[in-house]
Length: 157
Image 1 (cartoon, one colour):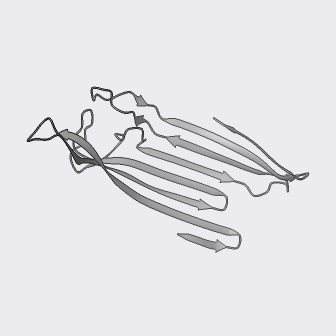
Image 2 (tube, one colour):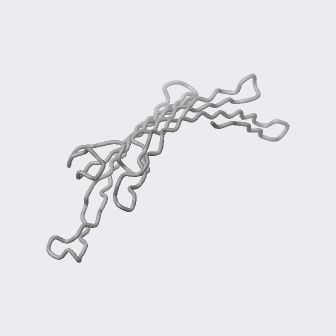
Image 3 (tube, helix red, strand yellow):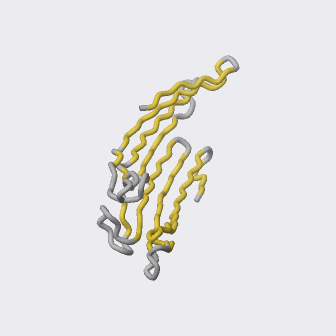
């Protein structure tokens, strides 16, 4: 959705629901020497993002629907977060940006959170180490047309 509620102000809201089947190999029940590929789980990513002239926010959730797997507590058919390898169960960010300050510069800032996430299972199929959650902050100072040049300075932590 996009709207222009007042002169010079535009807003946008978007959302998505994305799903993908994941195939896995399993021994054929009739001939164990052969492999049989079948849909064993489904990944689901859903999120929303909102943006206005001077600010933005986003929230994303990644979950898995499927069979019981080693180290997971889900049951067939239920959606479970925090079990998709290398995908955090939740990611969120929000930022703001100023209009031209004192006729010289724009200042922007953003906070980002990436949730804890599992890594791939080891060679035995056992759960591996989980990557910890990450919190970040960045800012940018932008000076347009400073004697014919644009100047940008910033920092990220």
